[in-house]
Image (cartoon, rainbow, N blue to C red):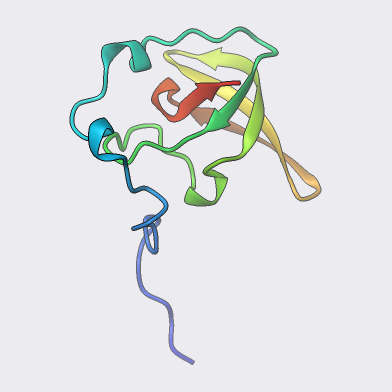
Length: 96
């Protein structure tokens, strides 16, 4: 059997596509967003920033913020029956 080639951003052409008005540099306010512990946040992965980018299957999922790690946030979410904790940059998060 053939092995599938490609990395973590394979098959993401439509998933990471941006609106034409959103293309270009990211606002500084997106980097400086503040969340409190217990807040809910949605993973909206930004393709123009590769640092702190979680797996592509999490795009659009909701998680709860349980802590901080430097500039990043630790988010807990349920993936099927497993609880997972991820260290994510605030650029890839949106407040609910």
